[in-house]
Length: 397
Picture 1: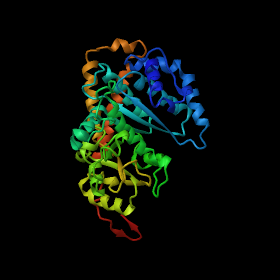
Picture 2: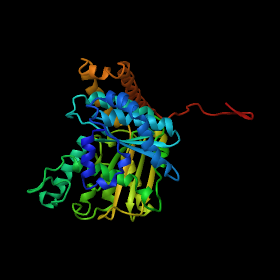
Picture 3: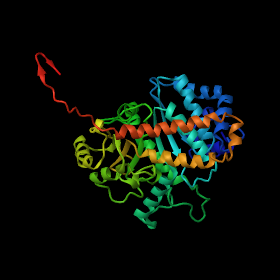
Picture 4: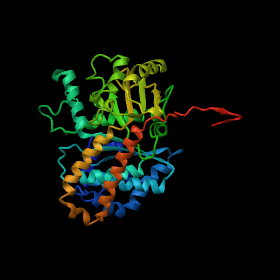
């Protein structure tokens, strides 16, 4: 919403990509206040938002889904973003709603981010069909990992990871992190843009990875790691097929600070870009499956997809999407940070100008129920019948 930020984007190198009619601004943002964005800016600009959504929707021959990009730490992305999510549910109930949400890290510099993040998480639980959570700290660690693996001399002057050089203006600290997130989205939507022998429709992701409506938080991982601007520059020797598959299940390649291998998988999707045979994919799934703790009622829950067009500069890359109970650890961290503020009612009065305090209680209960449901669904043991069936006449007792 902040006019200065939008104008800076429009003046940048990518400014021509944006339709000026689709840009909506105000004098300032939401001041890191979820309630301001959700309960003030949302209703105030509802008609403008609907008009901005209606124009591209009417140009679609077959509306498939919406993809919302938001950050949960501030006020506009979290509050207004969740308002838009609710708006999409009301106006286009048949279209799937995907959200790519950046979770704040524990050392986030926005003091009120625990409030904003938990309120947003409750809304995402109730109104999104699938959520792809990203975490700032994980993206920062990935940038460091790329630097470590290639060494300082491997980074090109134009690299998103190299930072500003002499004579250049100050670079943006988040460019490299944003690039990795953008690479994930490019991979996710590749089946929409390119042909493939085994393309996976976006809506198939929810069908195969979301076994229960509220358990729709899908963790993403990538191999090889790079930002779009660095593809072909920092890759080094091509990775072996088996190495790519192994890396997407490693902790270092997760876009969240979690380790899925130590928790239970509800479902898994592997999306390959490049010249790859389904036989190679099946072989690697068979190789890795014994090391993964799959939930007993979906032990064969793997969805595979192949898009024939690889990213520029590499022969192939792999995106992993998993529904795993380890996401509960991130939710609990978010709950703990929220509780430390809310226990003493710090900064609460800023929110109560626009909303009732009961909304905080409902959000806490929603997230607690979400955690319980994840743990209950993954901890359930298989049912066995000890009683033997004995034939009695024409019946079995």
